[in-house]
Image (cartoon, rainbow, N blue to C red; front, side, top):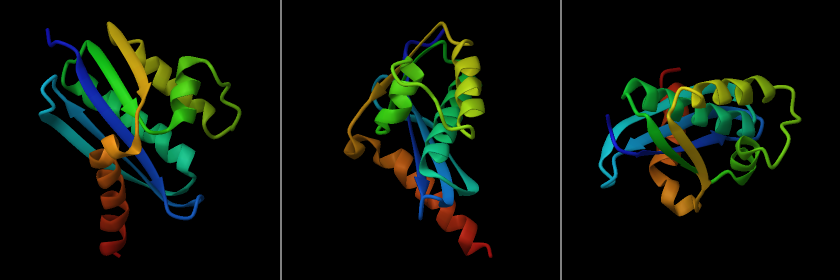
Length: 138
């Protein structure tokens, strides 16, 4: 069984709504990257992209057999919604929120923390790269 691992996630939307994507990175306790992923999401909002970043982080952690997870994000809104401090009101976010809660239930322990944007640069880079790569293929 692995010790506590860490995941950062981010979402990007150029235009809000606009071309959107998500990025996530899984780290061990020393800061070594274990996995990373980026995903293009089509035209959508930043909050939709942020939730997809959370889902991507949770999926990476599950794929790596993580039982205890600390997730960090620079989206205060998403963190507070996951904590239950804010209600999820946007109809398009409710199913993403519900899916995140379902995935979180598979972990022994999971905590979501708000962190500064500067400490989330790799997840941000992956999210933006997914948009860039999508348009480079066209």
